[in-house]
Length: 309
Length: 264
Image 1: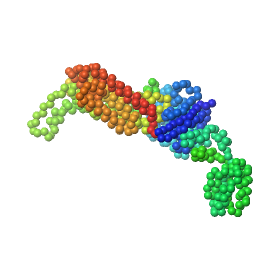
Image 2: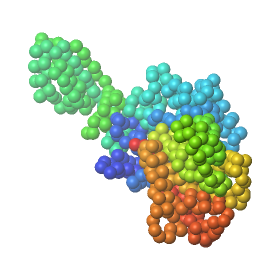
Image 3: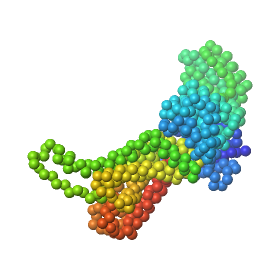
Image 4: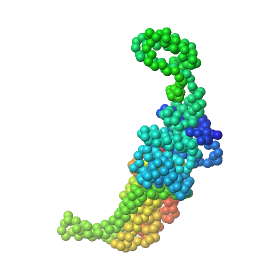
């Protein structure tokens, strides 16, 4: 069942359209990645979901929310660079955030202690936030987003600003969290999305390029692909240029360089046979250094989607 | 309402931790007490100044006690206003540029509570600081000259507190509109000066002008000068207009935060 349904969401700024009529649904309990290169509209979309930015048009609807209820009650949000009051201690900030979400002072305090332990900064809870490192602030940010047990956890580039160790720690933490609540996070790193998510939404230039469950998308876009590399000597290059002009049916060049080529194939077996025959016929001319026959990865799809084809 | 109190308590805690709750009242006490004390010792100070010619005779009329208190108010009107504006100049723009406003406003908190809690804390601190400073002035005037009746002092304090509230509110308003904290402090002081100058110099009746408040406060100290400028009805009009301006400024500040809760 869809927890959140977004329909025809659009945000126009004075000169440009940052988000252009996107629509998607997020199922309850899913972990969804909002993927896209920088400037694709990820942060704008997230800020509209959290209510920080009024949409130009379009609707954002939560299933089961009473009319007139504040959407923010259901959302926990961690911005790209969380900001805190440096003069507060980590624990004070969590209690403050909890009370603002409607928890009683006692409840907020016990949630704060629990979450400090959960994100691994309980020893720093009584220190001023001004002295926290970037990784600690990110974890405190996660804790404050979780304080009121939100139905949807929204994270904007949660690991982009962290060093490799901090990144690993936050990714592990997210892996644990996704079994407890619905998570939407944005990233420009495909690898992070593949590691954590059930669903992906790929944004490109403010539009939704592809969306759906990771396995479905992988399956639907699984295309045989051949990649051939030569040593790049003169005769090999001449052969390659000539061969690309008379490619047999069912083979299509995806990208070619002077020394090699990447080919999409209609049928893997025919393609394999025709390439091997071609290479055998020209065995004297061509110095092959690498031949790989397999299927497209999500990386290919991601690049294709965001390169604006 | 509980959330409003939580927000208010945070503001107050911030002012305590940044020692604003110490230096603002302390400055007002210094300002308020120094006026009667220096006025009292002025003849001695001048007599001991070495550059007077031999045999010079100085004759100072002893000032009326209400005049001493009125000059304390005029001290507050210059340095006091500056301190009040400086102490809260970044109240909204600071949170917006730091990003903390966005952190708080994605929680189910109303924008009106967010702004009015900050306003209430800033105004409370300004009024408490003024009250202790004025109290000090009153005490030393009573001790060194003659006591001034509490009715007169009370009335003038109320009028002056309203004026301070207006200046605080204007600082908050400009802090929501302008990016720079210094520009916000400057703008609110400029508006305050313009209003007072207009009230004092333009040659027509201006019962509506809130800039009249500081003069009204000073003249209400003189029991003999009643009724106050233009009668009690016109004082109420001034107060009502000031309250309306404060309410309007708050509404604009709330709208401005709603429109732009964070930079970029």
